[in-house]
Image: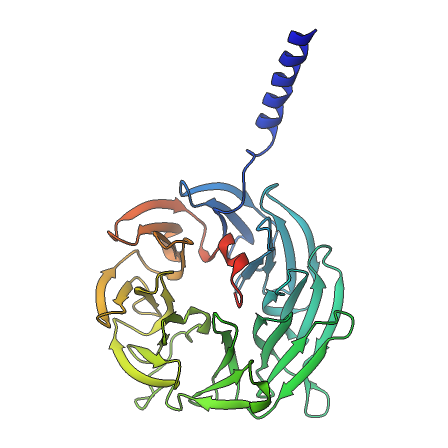
Length: 390
């Protein structure tokens, strides 16, 4: 009888293993957005391999993602207003809502209980229960007698707050969800024309909005919100030559190393080095093209830069000690996104026009792996679950 039970147990263990995905933890998982297929690729970084394809996520032409604090679930924000919850272990969609007509990203609260989505149409922010995707709040971005503004630059902030900017109104709003049933919203007006994106510094202190309608940036100190919004970097913009801008830089790509921030100059072939104590430009580093993402390795020693057309086949690496470019790589046309593994030993790169993902060793700069991917764009690793503002 005992031998029979052991044999039966081994048999069913084999059946379950054959029928379902291998049991695993989540720490080395990630997703890749296949923008034109409306699908995700599930990847793992220990062996740099593709685990699964997950279809059915709608319009992913400007998609982003956040993760639950246990790293099991990804929340995908699609351009069509879709909010999709994906189980990375079961490799399937577990919930999906079409919450607006046109959305542009989202965030998850500090405690992981709420997911917020910023919307163009209708303008505003909707907030959902992270477990069920039931809507818990609707914050219309009303201004000027009832008009609705597009919302951009939505981030999470400490204290279960969400911070975002209003493109049409030129405002920054802070929504405090300490009481999830009655969010408190504080509005900062006249911050500058057409804020197009926003970031929050890794310590959660400063929210910074980029301005499309004028040069400069708007900064809100969340430790001292009573001081209001101040303008910084008044020359940050297209610059004196007014060069054509082929792709606006993404502020999320700012790299911060020590007391210095490295950010893409708009319309110029430069990376700006900014003192984060004074918020003044202290150096300009020449680079190959107009930078889009300026991303720091976890150590802060090196900063990687990709570019807009016509130089979007290149990546350059800046040494933050020497403050100069030390490496130039050429993965291929359409380099869109870079994502470092948590300890920084490798970086994943999406190469859209080659339908590939490339993985590089960050010490030798050797290309370690190439994975087929249909028009890949954003790469998001689960380590983001433990970093605010992403």
